[in-house]
Length: 94
Image (cartoon, rainbow, N blue to C red; front, top):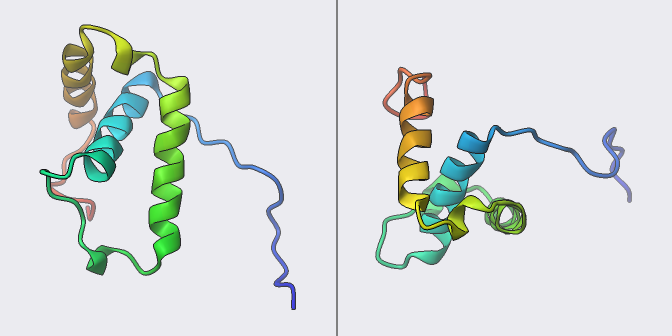
């Protein structure tokens, strides 16, 4: 049985360079740094959600140049500062 679904093909999500760097850093930390905390299983309803996050990280890895730069830590810091000014909450729930 096929479930009808309106969307076909791929969906593009636009990110500023600052958003992309911050998201890359977050996903890299969650996926690659075994010494850092990650969301626990209670945060996810299905393994597919983890697969999607790994896919986004992989896409960012192929597109971003910033992680290869010697001043990457500074780029991340500046990007975080800029984006933090736009968020007034302490967590994902406003």
